[in-house]
Length: 73
Image (cartoon, rainbow, N blue to C red; front, side):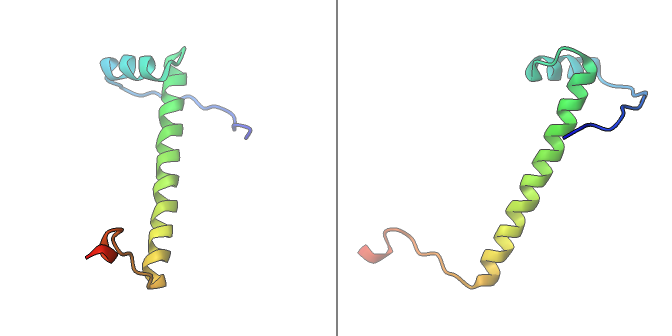
């Protein structure tokens, strides 16, 4: 997916958090670190949204879940 043109933003960030995030993400620059963190947040939100929709569909379906050992009792 093509990225829209970048814009300048001025932020005050905790330098220790930024260094740690940069190391964990293996980003080359601080900008890349912030971009990766934003991508991770957006991806996590989408996964949660999809999981919640699936859960809601399952609950509405009225299906029941039985334990694997239930037949042995």
